[in-house]
Length: 475
Image 1 (cartoon, helix red, strand yellow):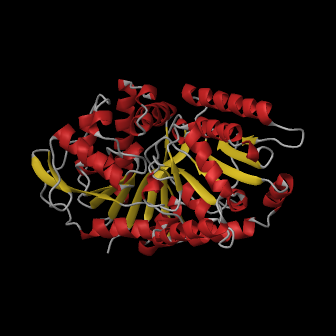
Image 2: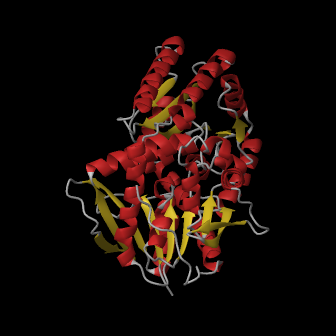
């Protein structure tokens, strides 16, 4: 029996003295340990003399193999095409999308380099699982090098319909890259619908009765299964973390500073997809429309800065600085600051304690594949006195978290109304909503997500040994 081989842009290599990874890494590591698997990807480092010779490490029953990128490759593949082209495109933000042919060429070159570095490490019975938008062409490159293993792909971000994806100059080529996979998974039914629409309108391929599309690869017909596999979290692990963190010094300091005021919390990295200015405007609308909350509630927003080299992110940071200052200037009292804005990373265990202390979790992305912060907030709650989740209807998590108060983040007054409803919600209703969501989180964990995807992939027939795969991409 072969191993599970995970490929991702970044690898969660264990390092001494660092806390264990959460979220996605939990589900992947469980599957990797079970098979003595391999996790392969970028080291996170750039070097002028980067080579395709992987650095290897074995830890906890898992093999890790990483390669460095040259500075030019990092700029074109990662900062350029992945983050300036595909990221805004797949999040429906065409106005922020940039396209450069040299960056597109770099994207394909790095995927080809990854395939060439991984190929010698593969066994004939291995099952390969490739992750996210940075790695879409990699299966085609592996097939070109002779890979006959089952290869699956999972997209963690939204999959837009063809009306959006077609804005990409090489959209059809990117779709054809997906035909080299045996299974392509997405987060939600909505994303699955977007992907199917792209194959239908972009390539003229309609799924068969069991959800697969048949397309031509190098003159041969082959089948790719399409399905939705919503990702979860380590629910019990995060709940335990939150219980312990509630008595930690950071959470105790926060509670002492709050007095008897209610806490609204939001936490994610600074990104234009997360709807951060919209939720600040919504909080301002709460104070204006429902003055009974003045000096009774505080909004804590953690937004760790990221991608500072990108102009749109710098502009977003300035906008948030301005909004937070304006709200505090308009509403603050000598003993009350309405908005506490923290523009740096906060430790995961500290956040867990903050989530547990918060009466409201405010999660308002403009578009999100799933959003694990919403799930972590629910998992962190005290069962005897749970808080309320206010969640954007555009988050993938909204598809399954029926106990949340859903809101359109583009409507500031709607956010204000939902916040008011959450702050005034009686305990019995809070418990009922929390219990329904917690049951779902316990059923759909990160480990079960990985198990279900790999089980579906393993059930598919191995590619025909005689099939001629796609020729290598050249630019």
